[in-house]
Image (cartoon, rainbow, N blue to C red; front, side):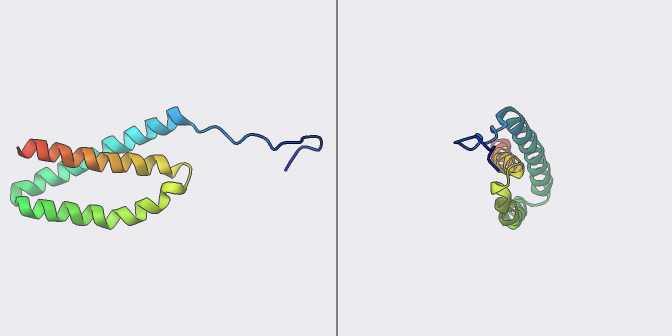
Length: 97
């Protein structure tokens, strides 16, 4: 609602970049560690099984998580989780080589 003598609406709230990036970094670290732990233990049993199960888990969670990307607070967690998946898979590939 506009103040009675204002010609312009109030400016929108600022984006909390510092807090958001901190939350995204924490989410990325948690997801990357989870991906690496899950994948490395499965690879000890069977490497092909590890790859298939990693893909199934990420493909199953991705649609639910991706819907939250437009919600102001949850978007930081979504982008952090996406970065964590990429970092975890990269670390698994480097560790396998």
